Length: 549
Ligand code: ATP
Ligand code: MG
Image (tube, rainbow, N blue to C red; front, side, top):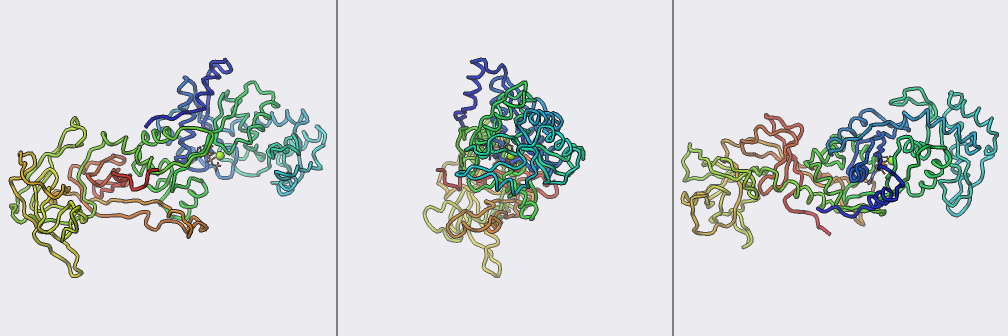
Protein backbone atom coordinates (compact mmCIF):
# COMPACT_ATOMS: atom_id res chain seq x y z
CA UNK A 1 0.00 0.00 0.00
CA UNK A 2 1.22 3.39 -0.91
CA UNK A 3 1.57 6.29 1.45
CA UNK A 4 -0.88 9.02 0.56
CA UNK A 5 -0.30 12.75 0.65
CA UNK A 6 0.45 14.21 4.06
CA UNK A 7 -0.15 17.91 4.34
CA UNK A 8 1.63 18.26 7.69
CA UNK A 9 4.90 17.08 6.14
CA UNK A 10 4.48 19.73 3.47
CA UNK A 11 4.14 22.42 6.17
CA UNK A 12 7.18 21.10 8.03
CA UNK A 13 9.31 21.13 4.90
CA UNK A 14 8.30 24.77 4.26
CA UNK A 15 9.03 25.79 7.86
CA UNK A 16 12.48 24.26 7.67
CA UNK A 17 13.20 25.78 4.28
CA UNK A 18 12.10 29.26 5.35
CA UNK A 19 14.09 28.99 8.57
CA UNK A 20 11.04 29.31 10.81
CA UNK A 21 12.26 26.27 12.72
CA UNK A 22 15.67 24.63 12.85
CA UNK A 23 14.48 21.18 13.90
CA UNK A 24 11.13 19.41 13.93
CA UNK A 25 9.85 18.40 17.37
CA UNK A 26 6.48 16.70 17.82
CA UNK A 27 4.74 14.97 20.69
CA UNK A 28 2.10 12.28 21.11
CA UNK A 29 -0.07 13.32 24.09
CA UNK A 30 -2.43 10.53 25.16
CA UNK A 31 -4.48 10.85 28.29
CA UNK A 32 -3.57 7.81 30.44
CA UNK A 33 -7.22 6.95 31.06
CA UNK A 34 -7.73 4.15 28.52
CA UNK A 35 -6.03 1.75 26.16
CA UNK A 36 -5.02 3.07 22.76
CA UNK A 37 -7.17 2.15 19.77
CA UNK A 38 -6.46 2.11 16.06
CA UNK A 39 -7.66 5.73 15.75
CA UNK A 40 -4.79 6.74 18.01
CA UNK A 41 -2.46 4.97 15.61
CA UNK A 42 -3.12 7.76 13.12
CA UNK A 43 -1.96 10.34 15.66
CA UNK A 44 1.06 8.24 16.66
CA UNK A 45 2.13 7.62 13.09
CA UNK A 46 1.66 11.29 12.19
CA UNK A 47 3.72 12.49 15.15
CA UNK A 48 6.53 9.96 14.81
CA UNK A 49 6.76 9.58 11.05
CA UNK A 50 6.55 13.29 10.25
CA UNK A 51 9.36 14.12 12.66
CA UNK A 52 11.42 11.16 11.50
CA UNK A 53 11.13 12.26 7.87
CA UNK A 54 13.12 15.40 8.80
CA UNK A 55 15.46 13.84 11.36
CA UNK A 56 13.43 15.43 14.17
CA UNK A 57 12.30 14.31 17.60
CA UNK A 58 9.07 13.00 19.11
CA UNK A 59 8.15 12.98 22.78
CA UNK A 60 5.60 10.86 24.47
CA UNK A 61 3.72 13.10 26.85
CA UNK A 62 1.11 11.71 29.16
CA UNK A 63 -1.60 14.30 29.32
CA UNK A 64 -2.37 13.61 32.98
CA UNK A 65 -3.71 16.99 34.04
CA UNK A 66 -7.15 15.55 34.79
CA UNK A 67 -6.88 13.38 37.91
CA UNK A 68 -10.26 11.67 37.69
CA UNK A 69 -9.71 8.60 35.56
CA UNK A 70 -5.97 8.32 35.20
CA UNK A 71 -4.05 5.26 36.19
CA UNK A 72 -0.60 3.72 35.98
CA UNK A 73 -2.01 0.65 34.25
CA UNK A 74 -2.68 2.83 31.21
CA UNK A 75 0.71 4.56 31.40
CA UNK A 76 2.39 1.19 31.04
CA UNK A 77 -0.02 -0.14 28.43
CA UNK A 78 0.47 2.92 26.21
CA UNK A 79 4.25 2.52 26.33
CA UNK A 80 3.91 -1.15 25.39
CA UNK A 81 1.68 -0.23 22.46
CA UNK A 82 4.18 2.29 21.13
CA UNK A 83 6.97 -0.25 21.41
CA UNK A 84 4.89 -2.80 19.56
CA UNK A 85 4.27 -0.33 16.75
CA UNK A 86 8.02 0.18 16.59
CA UNK A 87 8.27 3.73 17.92
CA UNK A 88 10.62 4.88 20.62
CA UNK A 89 9.99 8.35 22.03
CA UNK A 90 13.00 10.65 22.46
CA UNK A 91 11.63 11.62 25.88
CA UNK A 92 8.77 10.53 28.09
CA UNK A 93 7.13 13.43 29.92
CA UNK A 94 4.13 13.82 32.16
CA UNK A 95 1.93 16.88 31.78
CA UNK A 96 1.48 16.95 35.56
CA UNK A 97 5.22 17.47 36.03
CA UNK A 98 4.68 21.00 34.70
CA UNK A 99 2.07 21.90 37.32
CA UNK A 100 4.38 24.32 39.11
CA UNK A 101 5.49 26.03 35.89
CA UNK A 102 1.88 26.18 34.70
CA UNK A 103 0.83 27.72 38.01
CA UNK A 104 3.52 30.42 37.58
CA UNK A 105 2.09 31.28 34.16
CA UNK A 106 -1.37 31.61 35.68
CA UNK A 107 0.04 34.07 38.23
CA UNK A 108 1.61 35.98 35.35
CA UNK A 109 -1.72 36.26 33.56
CA UNK A 110 -3.34 37.53 36.76
CA UNK A 111 -0.63 40.16 37.17
CA UNK A 112 -1.22 41.24 33.57
CA UNK A 113 -4.91 41.54 34.43
CA UNK A 114 -5.63 38.80 31.88
CA UNK A 115 -7.09 36.31 34.33
CA UNK A 116 -9.50 36.51 37.28
CA UNK A 117 -10.95 34.34 40.00
CA UNK A 118 -14.64 33.75 39.42
CA UNK A 119 -17.22 32.74 42.02
CA UNK A 120 -19.85 31.67 39.50
CA UNK A 121 -20.79 28.01 39.59
CA UNK A 122 -20.11 25.71 36.64
CA UNK A 123 -23.79 25.93 35.61
CA UNK A 124 -23.82 29.71 35.82
CA UNK A 125 -20.67 29.93 33.75
CA UNK A 126 -22.25 27.78 31.03
CA UNK A 127 -25.41 29.86 31.14
CA UNK A 128 -23.53 33.17 30.97
CA UNK A 129 -21.42 31.91 28.09
CA UNK A 130 -24.11 32.66 25.48
CA UNK A 131 -24.70 30.78 22.26
CA UNK A 132 -23.47 30.81 18.69
CA UNK A 133 -25.93 33.57 17.92
CA UNK A 134 -25.91 35.47 21.23
CA UNK A 135 -22.92 37.03 22.98
CA UNK A 136 -22.09 35.94 26.52
CA UNK A 137 -22.60 37.97 29.69
CA UNK A 138 -19.65 39.13 31.77
CA UNK A 139 -19.30 37.62 35.21
CA UNK A 140 -19.92 40.02 38.11
CA UNK A 141 -16.48 38.95 39.44
CA UNK A 142 -14.66 39.84 36.23
CA UNK A 143 -13.29 43.13 37.48
CA UNK A 144 -11.68 42.07 40.73
CA UNK A 145 -8.38 43.79 41.39
CA UNK A 146 -5.11 42.10 40.54
CA UNK A 147 -4.27 41.92 44.26
CA UNK A 148 -7.54 40.29 45.16
CA UNK A 149 -7.17 37.79 42.30
CA UNK A 150 -3.60 36.90 43.34
CA UNK A 151 -4.75 36.38 46.91
CA UNK A 152 -7.77 34.26 45.97
CA UNK A 153 -5.85 32.14 43.48
CA UNK A 154 -3.17 31.38 46.05
CA UNK A 155 -5.90 30.43 48.50
CA UNK A 156 -7.40 28.16 45.84
CA UNK A 157 -4.07 26.38 45.69
CA UNK A 158 -3.82 26.18 49.48
CA UNK A 159 -7.10 24.31 49.60
CA UNK A 160 -9.16 27.01 51.30
CA UNK A 161 -12.12 26.44 48.97
CA UNK A 162 -14.26 23.46 48.13
CA UNK A 163 -14.60 21.83 44.72
CA UNK A 164 -16.45 24.07 42.29
CA UNK A 165 -16.51 27.06 44.62
CA UNK A 166 -14.16 29.11 42.46
CA UNK A 167 -12.39 28.94 39.11
CA UNK A 168 -9.64 30.90 37.44
CA UNK A 169 -10.74 32.29 34.09
CA UNK A 170 -8.93 34.06 31.28
CA UNK A 171 -10.16 37.59 30.65
CA UNK A 172 -10.59 37.63 26.89
CA UNK A 173 -13.87 38.56 25.23
CA UNK A 174 -17.38 37.50 26.25
CA UNK A 175 -18.68 38.61 22.84
CA UNK A 176 -16.18 36.64 20.76
CA UNK A 177 -17.79 34.72 17.90
CA UNK A 178 -15.61 31.79 19.04
CA UNK A 179 -17.19 30.53 22.25
CA UNK A 180 -13.86 29.08 23.39
CA UNK A 181 -12.61 32.66 23.72
CA UNK A 182 -15.42 33.77 26.06
CA UNK A 183 -13.33 33.85 29.23
CA UNK A 184 -12.38 30.16 29.22
CA UNK A 185 -11.70 28.42 32.51
CA UNK A 186 -7.97 27.99 33.16
CA UNK A 187 -8.07 26.27 36.56
CA UNK A 188 -10.64 24.42 38.60
CA UNK A 189 -10.63 23.11 42.15
CA UNK A 190 -10.59 19.32 42.57
CA UNK A 191 -9.72 17.81 45.93
CA UNK A 192 -8.60 14.57 44.40
CA UNK A 193 -5.73 12.16 44.54
CA UNK A 194 -3.53 12.30 41.43
CA UNK A 195 -1.86 9.09 40.20
CA UNK A 196 1.51 10.84 40.06
CA UNK A 197 1.33 14.10 42.06
CA UNK A 198 -0.53 12.35 44.90
CA UNK A 199 -2.21 14.98 47.12
CA UNK A 200 0.08 17.90 46.31
CA UNK A 201 -2.48 19.78 44.26
CA UNK A 202 -6.14 20.61 44.62
CA UNK A 203 -6.29 22.91 41.60
CA UNK A 204 -5.90 21.48 38.13
CA UNK A 205 -5.25 23.35 34.87
CA UNK A 206 -7.63 22.85 31.96
CA UNK A 207 -6.41 21.23 28.76
CA UNK A 208 -6.62 24.45 26.73
CA UNK A 209 -4.30 26.23 29.15
CA UNK A 210 -1.94 23.38 30.00
CA UNK A 211 -1.43 21.95 26.54
CA UNK A 212 0.09 24.95 24.71
CA UNK A 213 2.35 25.64 27.69
CA UNK A 214 3.55 22.02 27.78
CA UNK A 215 4.27 22.20 24.06
CA UNK A 216 6.25 25.36 24.63
CA UNK A 217 8.22 23.97 27.62
CA UNK A 218 9.19 20.96 25.52
CA UNK A 219 10.09 23.10 22.50
CA UNK A 220 7.56 21.29 20.35
CA UNK A 221 7.43 22.93 16.93
CA UNK A 222 4.41 21.20 15.37
CA UNK A 223 1.67 20.20 17.78
CA UNK A 224 -0.61 17.88 15.80
CA UNK A 225 -4.07 16.95 17.01
CA UNK A 226 -7.38 15.81 15.65
CA UNK A 227 -9.89 18.10 14.02
CA UNK A 228 -12.13 18.74 17.02
CA UNK A 229 -9.44 21.08 18.37
CA UNK A 230 -9.72 23.29 15.31
CA UNK A 231 -11.67 26.05 17.07
CA UNK A 232 -9.40 25.84 20.11
CA UNK A 233 -6.39 26.97 18.07
CA UNK A 234 -7.14 30.69 18.65
CA UNK A 235 -7.06 30.06 22.38
CA UNK A 236 -3.86 28.01 22.01
CA UNK A 237 -2.27 30.99 20.27
CA UNK A 238 -3.66 33.42 22.88
CA UNK A 239 -2.06 31.44 25.72
CA UNK A 240 1.27 31.33 23.88
CA UNK A 241 1.11 35.03 23.02
CA UNK A 242 0.30 36.17 26.57
CA UNK A 243 2.38 33.88 28.78
CA UNK A 244 5.81 35.32 27.88
CA UNK A 245 7.10 31.95 26.70
CA UNK A 246 10.56 31.42 25.24
CA UNK A 247 9.44 29.02 22.54
CA UNK A 248 6.42 29.40 20.23
CA UNK A 249 4.78 26.13 19.14
CA UNK A 250 2.00 25.87 16.54
CA UNK A 251 -1.02 23.63 16.42
CA UNK A 252 -2.09 21.72 13.29
CA UNK A 253 -5.19 19.61 12.99
CA UNK A 254 -5.88 16.45 11.02
CA UNK A 255 -9.08 14.49 10.44
CA UNK A 256 -9.98 11.64 12.75
CA UNK A 257 -9.80 8.12 11.46
CA UNK A 258 -12.96 6.04 11.70
CA UNK A 259 -13.40 2.48 10.49
CA UNK A 260 -16.70 0.95 9.44
CA UNK A 261 -18.25 -1.26 12.12
CA UNK A 262 -15.81 -0.08 14.81
CA UNK A 263 -16.66 2.31 17.59
CA UNK A 264 -13.57 3.89 19.02
CA UNK A 265 -14.78 6.12 21.81
CA UNK A 266 -13.12 5.42 25.12
CA UNK A 267 -16.44 5.57 26.93
CA UNK A 268 -17.76 2.76 24.76
CA UNK A 269 -14.68 0.59 25.13
CA UNK A 270 -14.72 1.02 28.88
CA UNK A 271 -18.40 0.11 29.01
CA UNK A 272 -17.82 -3.10 27.04
CA UNK A 273 -15.10 -4.12 29.48
CA UNK A 274 -16.98 -3.07 32.63
CA UNK A 275 -20.16 -4.84 31.53
CA UNK A 276 -18.08 -7.94 30.69
CA UNK A 277 -19.36 -7.98 27.12
CA UNK A 278 -15.76 -8.72 26.12
CA UNK A 279 -12.98 -10.50 28.00
CA UNK A 280 -10.93 -7.32 28.48
CA UNK A 281 -9.23 -4.51 26.59
CA UNK A 282 -7.27 -7.13 24.66
CA UNK A 283 -10.31 -9.12 23.57
CA UNK A 284 -9.62 -9.93 19.88
CA UNK A 285 -12.85 -8.15 18.89
CA UNK A 286 -11.78 -4.83 20.38
CA UNK A 287 -10.44 -1.99 18.21
CA UNK A 288 -7.69 -1.41 20.78
CA UNK A 289 -4.11 -1.99 19.67
CA UNK A 290 -3.79 -4.82 22.21
CA UNK A 291 -7.02 -6.32 20.87
CA UNK A 292 -5.93 -6.09 17.25
CA UNK A 293 -2.59 -7.62 18.15
CA UNK A 294 -4.29 -10.55 19.85
CA UNK A 295 -6.60 -10.87 16.85
CA UNK A 296 -3.48 -11.37 14.75
CA UNK A 297 -2.97 -8.00 13.10
CA UNK A 298 0.69 -7.14 12.74
CA UNK A 299 2.18 -3.76 13.58
CA UNK A 300 3.26 -3.41 9.94
CA UNK A 301 -0.23 -4.15 8.66
CA UNK A 302 -1.68 -1.50 10.96
CA UNK A 303 0.95 1.06 10.01
CA UNK A 304 0.59 0.39 6.28
CA UNK A 305 -3.16 0.60 6.57
CA UNK A 306 -3.09 3.90 8.46
CA UNK A 307 -0.55 5.40 6.07
CA UNK A 308 -2.65 4.34 3.09
CA UNK A 309 -5.56 6.39 4.44
CA UNK A 310 -3.56 9.59 3.96
CA UNK A 311 -3.78 12.65 6.15
CA UNK A 312 -5.93 15.68 5.58
CA UNK A 313 -8.15 18.13 7.40
CA UNK A 314 -11.31 16.04 7.05
CA UNK A 315 -12.48 13.16 9.20
CA UNK A 316 -12.53 9.95 7.22
CA UNK A 317 -14.27 6.62 7.49
CA UNK A 318 -12.39 3.73 5.98
CA UNK A 319 -13.74 0.28 5.19
CA UNK A 320 -12.67 -2.42 7.65
CA UNK A 321 -11.91 -4.58 4.61
CA UNK A 322 -8.93 -2.34 3.87
CA UNK A 323 -7.39 -3.25 7.22
CA UNK A 324 -7.82 -6.96 6.45
CA UNK A 325 -6.27 -6.40 3.05
CA UNK A 326 -3.24 -4.80 4.70
CA UNK A 327 -2.85 -7.90 6.89
CA UNK A 328 -3.00 -10.24 3.89
CA UNK A 329 -0.46 -8.09 2.04
CA UNK A 330 1.88 -8.26 5.00
CA UNK A 331 1.61 -12.00 5.68
CA UNK A 332 1.01 -13.49 2.25
CA UNK A 333 4.66 -14.26 1.65
CA UNK A 334 5.74 -14.48 5.31
CA UNK A 335 3.34 -16.85 7.05
CA UNK A 336 3.62 -20.65 7.03
CA UNK A 337 0.60 -22.38 5.55
CA UNK A 338 -0.29 -25.39 7.69
CA UNK A 339 -3.40 -27.52 7.34
CA UNK A 340 -6.09 -27.11 9.96
CA UNK A 341 -9.57 -28.60 10.01
CA UNK A 342 -11.93 -26.35 11.92
CA UNK A 343 -15.17 -28.36 11.68
CA UNK A 344 -13.91 -31.91 11.33
CA UNK A 345 -15.55 -34.80 9.50
CA UNK A 346 -13.75 -38.13 9.52
CA UNK A 347 -13.06 -39.91 6.25
CA UNK A 348 -12.12 -43.61 6.33
CA UNK A 349 -10.24 -44.78 3.26
CA UNK A 350 -11.33 -48.39 3.14
CA UNK A 351 -8.72 -49.69 0.67
CA UNK A 352 -5.75 -48.16 2.56
CA UNK A 353 -3.76 -50.44 4.95
CA UNK A 354 -4.92 -50.14 8.57
CA UNK A 355 -1.68 -49.50 10.46
CA UNK A 356 0.23 -47.59 7.82
CA UNK A 357 1.15 -43.90 8.13
CA UNK A 358 3.06 -42.38 5.22
CA UNK A 359 4.55 -38.93 4.83
CA UNK A 360 4.05 -36.69 1.84
CA UNK A 361 5.81 -33.50 0.90
CA UNK A 362 3.94 -30.23 1.41
CA UNK A 363 5.27 -26.74 0.64
CA UNK A 364 5.44 -24.40 3.65
CA UNK A 365 4.14 -21.53 1.54
CA UNK A 366 3.01 -22.35 -1.97
CA UNK A 367 3.95 -18.83 -3.14
CA UNK A 368 7.47 -18.78 -1.71
CA UNK A 369 9.72 -21.62 -2.77
CA UNK A 370 12.55 -20.55 -0.44
CA UNK A 371 10.32 -21.32 2.54
CA UNK A 372 10.83 -25.00 1.78
CA UNK A 373 8.56 -27.90 2.55
CA UNK A 374 7.68 -30.32 5.33
CA UNK A 375 6.37 -33.89 5.56
CA UNK A 376 2.65 -34.25 6.23
CA UNK A 377 1.13 -37.47 7.50
CA UNK A 378 -1.43 -39.55 5.60
CA UNK A 379 -3.24 -42.73 6.62
CA UNK A 380 -6.52 -44.62 6.41
CA UNK A 381 -8.14 -42.03 8.70
CA UNK A 382 -8.19 -38.34 7.86
CA UNK A 383 -10.26 -35.30 8.81
CA UNK A 384 -11.74 -32.97 6.24
CA UNK A 385 -14.00 -29.94 6.71
CA UNK A 386 -17.69 -30.75 7.13
CA UNK A 387 -18.36 -28.14 4.45
CA UNK A 388 -16.23 -30.06 1.98
CA UNK A 389 -18.65 -32.98 1.82
CA UNK A 390 -22.24 -33.42 0.63
CA UNK A 391 -23.93 -36.73 0.01
CA UNK A 392 -25.12 -35.55 -3.35
CA UNK A 393 -23.25 -33.12 -5.54
CA UNK A 394 -25.70 -30.19 -5.55
CA UNK A 395 -24.64 -28.57 -8.82
CA UNK A 396 -21.82 -28.32 -11.34
CA UNK A 397 -20.06 -25.58 -9.39
CA UNK A 398 -19.62 -27.83 -6.32
CA UNK A 399 -15.91 -28.56 -6.42
CA UNK A 400 -15.69 -30.74 -3.32
CA UNK A 401 -16.34 -34.31 -2.20
CA UNK A 402 -19.65 -36.17 -2.69
CA UNK A 403 -20.74 -39.77 -3.02
CA UNK A 404 -19.36 -41.17 -6.26
CA UNK A 405 -17.31 -38.03 -6.80
CA UNK A 406 -13.51 -37.91 -6.88
CA UNK A 407 -11.42 -35.10 -5.34
CA UNK A 408 -7.76 -34.58 -4.62
CA UNK A 409 -6.66 -34.49 -0.98
CA UNK A 410 -4.08 -31.74 -1.34
CA UNK A 411 -0.51 -33.06 -1.59
CA UNK A 412 -1.80 -36.65 -1.19
CA UNK A 413 -4.15 -38.84 -3.27
CA UNK A 414 -7.40 -38.75 -5.18
CA UNK A 415 -10.26 -40.21 -3.16
CA UNK A 416 -13.85 -41.09 -4.06
CA UNK A 417 -16.59 -41.15 -1.43
CA UNK A 418 -18.48 -44.43 -1.36
CA UNK A 419 -20.85 -44.40 1.64
CA UNK A 420 -21.71 -42.55 4.86
CA UNK A 421 -22.41 -43.39 8.49
CA UNK A 422 -25.07 -41.29 10.23
CA UNK A 423 -26.19 -40.71 13.81
CA UNK A 424 -29.83 -41.05 14.96
CA UNK A 425 -30.60 -37.51 13.84
CA UNK A 426 -29.48 -38.30 10.33
CA UNK A 427 -26.29 -36.25 10.54
CA UNK A 428 -23.32 -37.66 8.63
CA UNK A 429 -20.68 -38.62 11.18
CA UNK A 430 -18.24 -40.55 8.99
CA UNK A 431 -17.56 -40.86 5.29
CA UNK A 432 -16.15 -43.95 3.65
CA UNK A 433 -13.98 -43.59 0.58
CA UNK A 434 -11.47 -45.36 -1.63
CA UNK A 435 -8.18 -43.94 -2.86
CA UNK A 436 -6.22 -44.51 -6.04
CA UNK A 437 -2.55 -45.25 -5.22
CA UNK A 438 -1.51 -44.13 -8.72
CA UNK A 439 -2.53 -40.56 -7.96
CA UNK A 440 0.02 -39.91 -5.26
CA UNK A 441 1.04 -36.27 -5.39
CA UNK A 442 4.41 -35.72 -7.04
CA UNK A 443 4.35 -39.12 -8.74
CA UNK A 444 3.88 -37.48 -12.13
CA UNK A 445 0.31 -38.66 -12.48
CA UNK A 446 -1.49 -36.48 -15.02
CA UNK A 447 -4.60 -38.42 -15.87
CA UNK A 448 -8.19 -37.47 -15.01
CA UNK A 449 -9.24 -34.20 -13.45
CA UNK A 450 -10.55 -34.34 -9.86
CA UNK A 451 -13.66 -32.47 -8.76
CA UNK A 452 -11.62 -30.00 -6.70
CA UNK A 453 -8.78 -29.95 -4.16
CA UNK A 454 -9.52 -30.13 -0.47
CA UNK A 455 -7.21 -30.07 2.51
CA UNK A 456 -7.09 -32.63 5.32
CA UNK A 457 -5.34 -33.53 8.56
CA UNK A 458 -4.31 -37.12 9.30
CA UNK A 459 -6.21 -38.43 12.34
CA UNK A 460 -3.65 -40.33 14.46
CA UNK A 461 -1.05 -37.53 14.37
CA UNK A 462 -3.51 -34.60 14.49
CA UNK A 463 -3.47 -32.26 17.47
CA UNK A 464 -6.79 -31.04 18.83
CA UNK A 465 -7.13 -27.26 18.72
CA UNK A 466 -9.68 -24.61 19.54
CA UNK A 467 -10.45 -22.07 16.86
CA UNK A 468 -11.97 -18.73 17.77
CA UNK A 469 -13.85 -17.11 14.95
CA UNK A 470 -14.98 -13.52 15.11
CA UNK A 471 -17.63 -11.29 13.64
CA UNK A 472 -18.23 -7.58 14.15
CA UNK A 473 -19.06 -6.55 17.73
CA UNK A 474 -22.00 -4.51 16.51
CA UNK A 475 -24.81 -5.44 14.20
CA UNK A 476 -24.74 -3.15 11.19
CA UNK A 477 -26.82 -0.05 11.64
CA UNK A 478 -30.01 0.11 9.60
CA UNK A 479 -33.43 1.76 9.80
CA UNK A 480 -34.77 -0.79 12.27
CA UNK A 481 -32.05 -0.39 14.87
CA UNK A 482 -30.52 3.04 14.38
CA UNK A 483 -32.17 4.46 17.49
CA UNK A 484 -31.09 1.62 19.73
CA UNK A 485 -28.40 2.07 22.30
CA UNK A 486 -25.18 0.44 21.16
CA UNK A 487 -25.42 -2.18 23.92
CA UNK A 488 -28.67 -3.34 22.29
CA UNK A 489 -26.93 -3.49 18.93
CA UNK A 490 -24.24 -5.89 20.19
CA UNK A 491 -23.86 -8.84 17.88
CA UNK A 492 -24.63 -12.02 19.90
CA UNK A 493 -22.57 -14.04 17.41
CA UNK A 494 -19.41 -11.93 17.45
CA UNK A 495 -17.49 -14.90 18.91
CA UNK A 496 -17.89 -18.55 17.96
CA UNK A 497 -15.52 -21.30 18.93
CA UNK A 498 -14.90 -24.58 17.15
CA UNK A 499 -12.98 -27.69 18.20
CA UNK A 500 -10.91 -29.11 15.37
CA UNK A 501 -7.43 -30.32 14.50
CA UNK A 502 -4.09 -29.05 13.25
CA UNK A 503 -0.96 -30.71 11.90
CA UNK A 504 1.35 -32.07 14.56
CA UNK A 505 4.25 -29.71 13.83
CA UNK A 506 2.22 -26.92 15.44
CA UNK A 507 2.77 -28.44 18.88
CA UNK A 508 5.45 -25.85 19.66
CA UNK A 509 3.55 -22.83 18.40
CA UNK A 510 3.99 -19.70 20.50
CA UNK A 511 1.51 -16.91 21.29
CA UNK A 512 1.41 -14.34 18.48
CA UNK A 513 2.77 -16.73 15.82
CA UNK A 514 0.95 -16.04 12.55
CA UNK A 515 -0.26 -18.62 10.05
CA UNK A 516 -2.30 -18.91 6.96
CA UNK A 517 -4.32 -22.07 7.51
CA UNK A 518 -4.89 -23.52 4.06
CA UNK A 519 -8.27 -22.39 2.69
CA UNK A 520 -9.38 -21.19 6.15
CA UNK A 521 -7.75 -17.80 6.47
CA UNK A 522 -5.14 -16.05 8.58
CA UNK A 523 -4.84 -17.16 12.19
CA UNK A 524 -2.68 -16.30 15.16
CA UNK A 525 -1.84 -18.35 18.21
CA UNK A 526 -3.72 -16.92 21.19
CA UNK A 527 -1.86 -15.70 24.26
CA UNK A 528 -3.66 -18.38 26.32
CA UNK A 529 -2.64 -21.21 24.00
CA UNK A 530 -0.55 -23.97 25.60
CA UNK A 531 0.91 -27.26 24.41
CA UNK A 532 -1.95 -29.02 26.19
CA UNK A 533 -4.61 -26.74 24.75
CA UNK A 534 -3.85 -25.07 21.45
CA UNK A 535 -5.94 -21.98 20.68
CA UNK A 536 -5.95 -20.08 17.40
CA UNK A 537 -7.73 -16.82 16.65
CA UNK A 538 -8.89 -16.11 13.14
CA UNK A 539 -7.55 -12.74 12.08
CA UNK A 540 -9.44 -12.67 8.78
CA UNK A 541 -10.52 -14.88 5.95
CA UNK A 542 -8.54 -15.32 2.76
CA UNK A 543 -10.90 -13.21 0.74
CA UNK A 544 -12.78 -10.18 1.86
CA UNK A 545 -16.26 -10.89 3.15
CA UNK A 546 -16.91 -7.15 3.14
CA UNK A 547 -17.62 -5.13 0.03
CA UNK A 548 -14.68 -2.95 -0.86
CA UNK A 549 -16.10 0.35 -2.00
P1 ATP B 1 -10.75 11.70 24.97
O1 ATP B 1 -11.40 12.84 24.27
O2 ATP B 1 -11.70 10.77 25.67
O3 ATP B 1 -9.55 12.08 25.75
P2 ATP B 1 -9.13 11.01 22.74
O4 ATP B 1 -9.53 10.04 21.69
O5 ATP B 1 -8.96 12.43 22.39
O6 ATP B 1 -10.22 10.78 23.80
P3 ATP B 1 -6.44 11.06 23.81
O7 ATP B 1 -5.78 10.12 24.73
O8 ATP B 1 -6.56 12.47 24.24
O9 ATP B 1 -7.88 10.46 23.49
O10 ATP B 1 -5.78 10.95 22.38
C1 ATP B 1 -4.43 11.23 22.09
C2 ATP B 1 -4.35 11.76 20.68
O11 ATP B 1 -4.89 10.84 19.75
C3 ATP B 1 -5.12 13.05 20.53
O12 ATP B 1 -4.27 14.00 19.89
C4 ATP B 1 -6.28 12.69 19.67
O13 ATP B 1 -6.61 13.76 18.85
C5 ATP B 1 -5.76 11.51 18.85
N1 ATP B 1 -6.84 10.64 18.40
C6 ATP B 1 -7.72 9.97 19.17
N2 ATP B 1 -8.62 9.30 18.42
C7 ATP B 1 -8.29 9.51 17.13
C8 ATP B 1 -8.83 9.10 15.86
N3 ATP B 1 -9.89 8.30 15.78
N4 ATP B 1 -8.21 9.52 14.73
C9 ATP B 1 -7.14 10.32 14.81
N5 ATP B 1 -6.59 10.74 15.95
C10 ATP B 1 -7.14 10.37 17.11
MG1 MG C 1 -8.26 13.91 24.16
